[in-house]
Length: 155
Length: 434
Image (cartoon, rainbow over all chains, first blue to last red; front, top):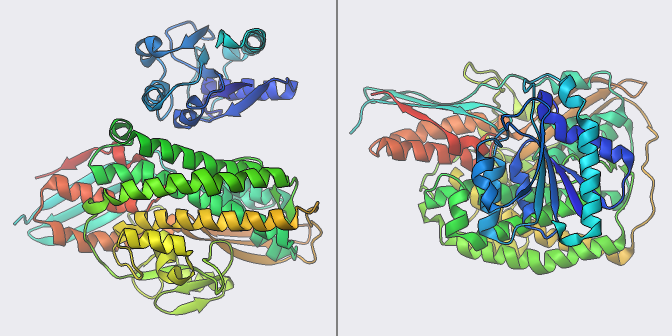
């Protein structure tokens, strides 16, 4: 089953986009996916990266795009140098954890939906521009799930 | 020998509290050796005021992301005491398995991911991936196993959702419990044996430091007390949990926003080493054997050995969990509903042992079943005065060593207590003023 994993802090503006999307997906009661909110420390991802089930990660990421910009990509070692430049909003960065997992053993197939934030201040809610992108992100997640169901080796 | 020393480890972040290690010696006189806590108060007791008894344990589990289950268990016990809610034997056994799992999970996290790098002189767990890959993998498997105990019984590994006053909203199946039992008995035991074997060869770097203090934990005559028991002081004996204020005696110091505590001496120690010292006879034989492997005997007056006592407790918790699961499987899971009909309203005081030590929750409910007042005393606060006292003895003993070595041993000392600040100690900046 595809694991949809959200990283982020809902008390820190657009950093909470992942958990917010996850909540919406939970309300939709879609079968065929496991929803996991891992909060704001990517270290918790390590355990999941070392399991065989494929992962779709939803995270706020500073990528140099316009606020609300969305990028979807497959995560692998070739991507890491590029990822290292913009995915460091959490205690342990995703790249550190991915590198660590790569050294420990086979890593789960992993794709990521990154959303460019507008606001990252503590005590703020999602910005209107990022909030407006929620339906798009949900649609992308559903498409990913269908792709996964159609051909398991997509991931 | 050095006469002047000024260490300012500023500050320890990302651990549910910020802290600095500050040591100052002038012309051979130790003027200051203390752990400064600079995190603002969180006002959880105030948050609870007016809350209905159904909500309280859900709120208090948020006090800590690591000990969420321990706070929830203590909270439920305090509410049940205040409202006269009896729980079934099945509920108590399931809660004990949860406490075993939470202790096991947290102890593994601290001992293997946070403290073991000290034994190897490296800055974090990351270099261990290269040098001790199999240990890291075993530690991850053990942590996952402990988390799964929480998920199967309480619905979630962190911030449980099925545990409510009077019982559980949903019960695990016997099949799920059998799977847990088999995993603990097979992979759990095997991984822990391997971990003990490797770590026992790394611990010769643990400083040989001793300072006898007062050790306070729960104590139960029939079992190694984690869920139930009386307050036990190594100096003065047993007290009912309801007398906790006479034991903790909180006071304020200028250098910490967290209250300190003291009882028979200027400070006391809580946590795995206190439990080990006070309850050694009640450990499982397999755990006693593990302690022997590390040369850990009771009483032990070296606070650095708290990490080893944690590993010993993991062995104990694995064995206890297996037996408790076996018991439930044999008698079968009864389809019980939680008892949520208060027999009375008033004050309830409860205590459990969470990984870092003895925890107290004290609630007073009004006749509407809402909180009138609350008090929570957590283990890390109870250890702070003891850490200061340890530093005051340690620094003069190692003053002849390099500043780097002194700083490392001070950091190791604080980390050995497994306070909620230990996960960031590896990221410290140290300033020496000469």
